[in-house]
Image (cartoon, rainbow, N blue to C red):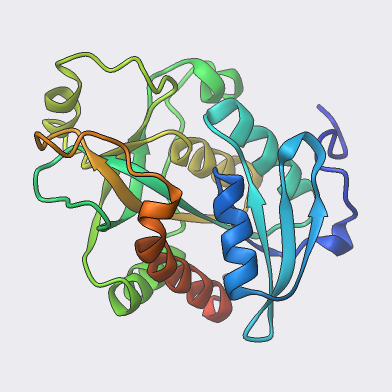
Length: 245
């Protein structure tokens, strides 16, 4: 295993211990420009853009992890190597239950995944726990209710293949209690357990596969008003949260 980052080419002093992790470079840029003071783009290698600045005098980094588990695992590993202690994923998800509307927020209380894939490369003999830090998640839920409004608590499914869904996909996962689908939370939570950092996730619903007419994915600009509220919830959580030693 690498003892130092191979893809993120920065020093530990350029990264905060508190990191917002996102999939979309446009979202990272938007967050840095709209919420951080003295924000600096400290990494562009492999398009894993990282901004570090201050939110209400709290030093925070915003890091791009790309799409899917394999890309995200590299970033989560290397952020931890560089000194990150808390990572909150601010992303999007597709609804799997009719009650979720476009723009609603989901605090992911856990993440299901298919055995094998990226997590299976780490844990070959078992299903790895994919659950968040409960104290961090409670704080995130409280802040999401305060700033975002419509917030749901529930488990998500982390898919390894965006276009692999068949016609049974929604019923299969919703019948198991899963409320939304995305691609990276299970990897974040599993690595948080293995590498000993705190993690949670707040997801904005970008489409709903369970509601006819709402299956089309909304993109960055269309979701901006909802992401703005979710971002404030995440940043306020990071500002106030003190890790349990």
